[in-house]
Image (cartoon, rainbow, N blue to C red; front, side, top):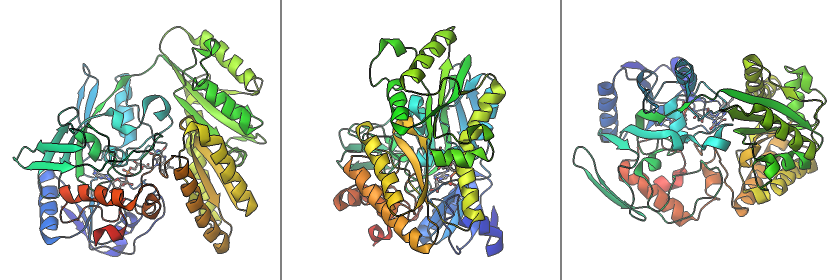
Length: 490
Ligand SMILES: Cc1cc2nc3c(=O)[nH]c(=O)nc-3n(C[C@H](O)[C@H](O)[C@H](O)COP(=O)(O)OP(=O)(O)OC[C@H]3O[C@@H](n4cnc5c(N)ncnc54)[C@H](O)[C@@H]3O)c2cc1C
């Protein structure tokens, strides 16, 4: 086991991509095999030492940043263990990165559908946060692709969970572990928002036990391994960036493409990604991609082709673009693999460019991860824009419009504006909750959003959610401060 206690040597582990920072911790532990990890966790549990689990640190809510106690990094558990070509499944250790997995699968003509924009994240981190990406529009979030998990519980027992093995009876979960430990507890009864959602524990009547662990942000157990479902790569991809002059036209295009209106003329249109860029995003991106300078709004459209139907799809797409007043003569169309990757890079670059701008100008960013139901999306987006304009706060909006989920980033120019932006952020969360949406559609709650998570459910619901943590982690050592704020611990 590698152990580091000097603050200079662990500095990188005291923050994540959100820039949320911790000043210190009692040490960084890097176990090199499962025996070392199990012993470490058992001792920490006995001594009630808080443990924060570190993945690749690309999280955006401070989830892997320790409040106190020790950090346990999973970085040595980075093996692809088994590929089953017949069943199209792969078994990986938790620290295999998404990039490594996709590159490996490429050779076999397979792919793993979840695709967070950041590809250096670990698979364990994506399961802990139930990460999503552009392809979530077609394929749902990470949870849909997880068949089985190997989880280390705080008492040192390793739990093997297979999808379908343990199901709740209504809201009662009863199961027995390999060591003969019996668990029997009641889930809180509440309704999760019917939108893309990564806020808090996933709870439904008759749910699968594995789903409780997926998205639990490391508060219930440590993910050691996962078996993931895969798909065959499509024959070809249609990928293009379409430009629009106003937001209403953008949303018309998106609504028809999503088949909200069942029009026969567009039946071949089946996007796997519909991603949005506002004028400020395009301004940022024009530094690197000059072809988007002076454009107002854009949508990145991606569709898979599995059989000979490309011409028909393209014809219907042209019709749709015309119908939504998009500019048919000025489309960025990917004619080859290189251009397809270039458009992906275009999408990835926006968050990077915004972050670079922030650090270059010593500014702060107040970013949202909110999704609302389709019927409220336009109203919600307009409200956010209007509020920022009212207070002269610069903003940039982009992201997963197909899921009614944007990253609306406020870029306050000074401390006074920053405070205002934080107030607006809370206001946006309240409005989203009133509209039956979520304050976190994909990044999770972590430590940064725990206070806003409390806007989503009554205190009693949150308290009974926290009781589930007590069931698996009675000494409350794992990932303290994630999802639940400090008051739940007293
Ligand atoms: C530029 C950029 C773009 C991004 N785009 C997206 C996006 O499109 N969609 C999206 O969903 N996210 C996105 N993210 C956020 C981030 O990539 C994801 O949250 C990712 O899942 C985090 O993985 P990680 O390995 O870096 O985890 P970390 O940041 O290290 O940790 C995240 C959380 O998971 C827990 N954790 C990590 N490993 C384990 C484990 N083995 N067992 C239990 N708990 C564990 C940590 O304790 C922490 O709470 C983006 C981030 C950046 C910087």
